[in-house]
Image (tube, rainbow, N blue to C red; front, side):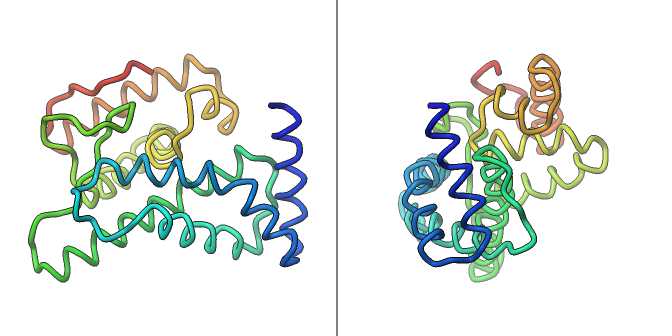
Length: 195
């Protein structure tokens, strides 16, 4: 696995040049991970959702490789930025659907650790985005952890490495952020998964 991560890091750095061949090699190397991440998010959506995993991957990837000011450090850095981009795409999609419906039902996503929809009401994506913005004003680290875990699909260990803070600190902030979000969004504080 270390060799694979090293190879991806080299591809990320090479892709910064904008060379079509390097960008294509990076897409091949990252596609499965990005597709899994997109599918995990979209599994929680309603069955007739119009955004498909492949479309989400391609839109996110296009935005990622067009970030000319970003120098990719490694695979985790790539997915940290990807989490922000995927969040924006999903929220924009939800807002567009909401505008079309003129106040109709919002797209919903599960904050469930395993990305499996719970039988309870799942959070509204637009409300989650607004709550994350408010949380960022109170505690930027907690907001970033939620973004990395939920939108980036990162593990506690990966978040710890990306943010360069201890695993226990990530776990503590994750628990506090989840409780705050559920309270803020009017949901029960019950979320599956401990860390």
